[in-house]
Length: 158
Ligand code: ZN
Image 1 (cartoon, protein in one colour):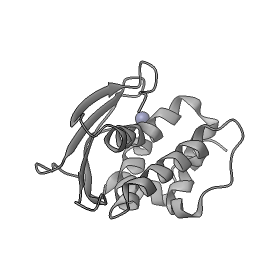
Image 2 (tube, rainbow, N blue to C red):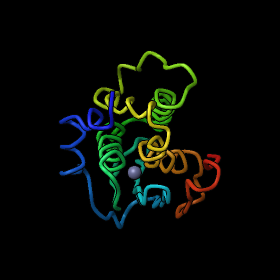
Image 3 (cartoon, rainbow, N blue to C red):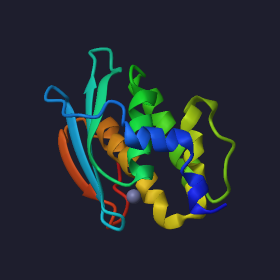
Image 4 (cartoon, rainbow, N blue to C red):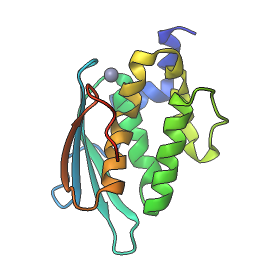
């Protein structure tokens, strides 16, 4: 497999026409992460409902195709899911890319499993996980409404 094969139609489509892209002034969380090794920058906006569902989720920023498509698919995947299920999906997606031996993909991940090809390109893994690390911050830190982190240092401890 070479890098070209990573850029399948679904991934390219999400990077060219990112879903749920835009500012969200009424969001509960604005989590900004950057990945200086590639130049990716993403701010994830998340709003929870009173029942602790992900009511609204969107993102802004600039990044490579892998970063943008992962963030775009993230927003579609976790919208209207309970907080705990969003956390499970984040764990499953990150395991798929980073666990020492590749796990069977969680079927709930759907098209996101297309990104598992980055396993073979370690320098691109952080492109794919950037938005998910931002999500982890929003899910785990109810008081940190505005957070900044960088992949340059150690992965943020949620
Ligand atoms: Zn990137």
